[in-house]
Amino acid sequence: MSLKLSLLSHSKFKGVDILLTSPWPKDVWNYGNPPTEANLKSCSALVASAAVSLKPRYHFSALQGENYERLPYRNHAVLQESAQHVSRFIALAGVGNPDKKKYIYAFTIVPMRAMDAAELVKQPLDVTENPYRKPEKDGKKSQAARATEEEEEPAQQFFFDLSKQQGKKRHSDGRGGQAKQPKKHPQPTGPCWFCLASPEVEKHLVVSIGEHCYVALAKGGLTSDHVLILPIGHYQAIVDLSSDVVEECEKYKASLRKFYRSKGKRYVMFERNYRSQHLQLQVVPLPLTCCTTEDIKESFIVQGQEQNLELLEIPQHTDIKQIVQPGTPYFYVELDSGEKLFHRIKKNFPLQFGREVLASEAILNIPTRADWKACKLSQEEEESQAKSFRREFEPFDFSLQD
Ligand SMILES: [Zn+2]
Image 1: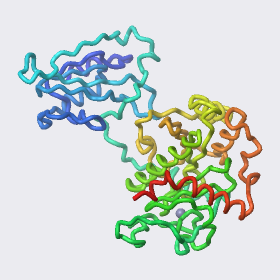
Image 2 (image 1 turned 90 degrees about the vertical axis):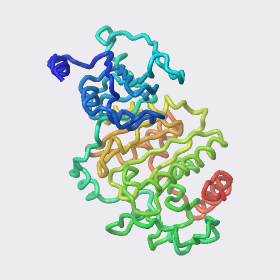
Image 3 (image 1 turned 30 degrees about the vertical axis):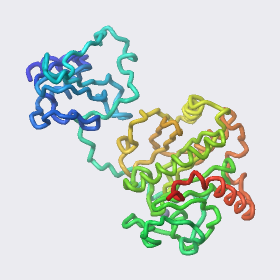
Image 4 (image 1 turned 135 degrees about the vertical axis):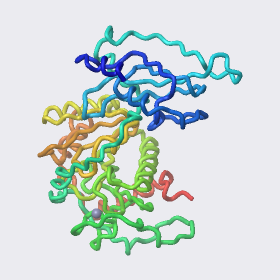
């Protein structure tokens, strides 16, 4: 550990280019691709701790006699620390081993002191979390408390009565209608406009119901095929969802993606976890010809800057749960190609921001539709819109497949 001390005492120490250790660092496979055969018990916590401090760009080990190349991992916490270079862990087998496992690794490396800072911290697409970092458990709840005290925004609300649901094909797995309510989920403190079991009804906007989530046309939608994915139970944000609910959201996203693609469109999804008690994933389809994913990202980022809101692109393989604690207000955008933008809300976030960006000249160029109230339809019009959406979506709807 004297090596660690001598290096870390340099104030400008960023890391080392290459680290060679005999044992593998303990837990190096966390968050990454698992090794296949290695004897994972004889890995060293001391070596792991050295890797944390020394931040090697390449870390080689050999003691296990196995070949293993871990996906690159980050040395910084996303959005909390400034970007640093990534580390790659590579284990090689013994020279001339009888099983012909890889024991040579050839590569070229420019020393980091000779590298441009931006080039050095470039993050590859398959970068993962740091395997040695424990997830934060400090439970900062100050912002959480503030967010739940805020009142639900009255826009785009509707009721739906589960008891009056009719004529819907359900899962034919013999569980009947009893299992439709999630076993356990948080209860709303007052009347909630989006809990599917709420007593008041405007059920005509609902277009699909799964086990944990449902899809409804947005009231006053930006386009006629703008929908919301909502959890059936009362959850405030994506980061609060249990894994089975997340899984079903993903299925709806995949179904919607195929559906919109069949119409020559891609969707943009956004969530505003601020002044909202029940999660609404807004899904707005855009013609593929109207703009590229780069255009869309740029519009969010630039129009955010104009309002002093910093939207950051987060790596595709980063789960939003790794970035925010439950209860933290945020605004989140996801393209159907998997690209993601994130903004941590401090205060006074413009409630219609997502809609405004998509309605702007740069994207759909329908600025007068940015305000949902300008797009309200009569109940008859809503009914027929939902009906035709249901009919067209049916072949793509996973909840209707056996
Ligand atoms: Zn609710």
